[in-house]
Amino acid sequence: MGAKSFKTTKVHFKVFKEEAEYWIKGFGLGGWKWYILHEHRMDEALAGYWINHEGCVVAIHLEPDWEDTEVTNKRLRQSAFHEVCHVLLTNLVRAAEDRYTEKGRIDEEEHHIIRILENAVFK
Image 1: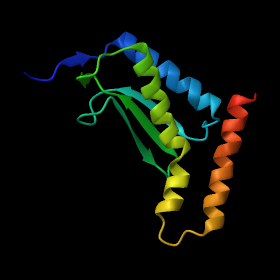
Image 2 (image 1 turned 60 degrees about the vertical axis):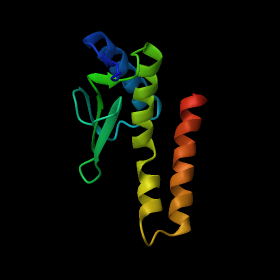
Image 3 (image 1 turned 90 degrees about the vertical axis):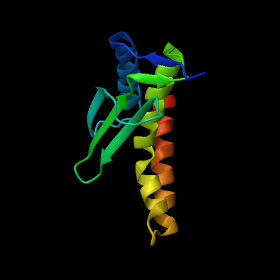
Image 4 (image 1 turned 60 degrees about the horizontal axis):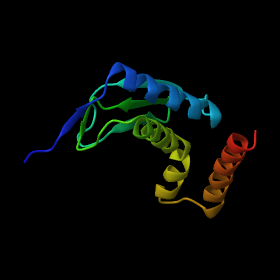
């Protein structure tokens, strides 16, 4: 028996986009140029992201076809949140992957993220 496929619609994309915009604003990530797309970019994913650090450009996308995962508003919102969090954490990940990262740089980025979360939660 094959995998069941579910399609995301324009209405689903609207939910995804509105949730992404909520967290982009809530986390203060307006320093990036954002593109939010509804197109196929990755196999076996519900959504994904792409970043150009030098140009401060990010694209997140909702996949049109979901394999074995029913499309619900909760999953759409969670997927949008997940992709925005990748951008929130991108500098920490880059610092951790850098061969010559000093502990101070990682601590600095950790506190930067904590301040963003504090501002989002305790407005």
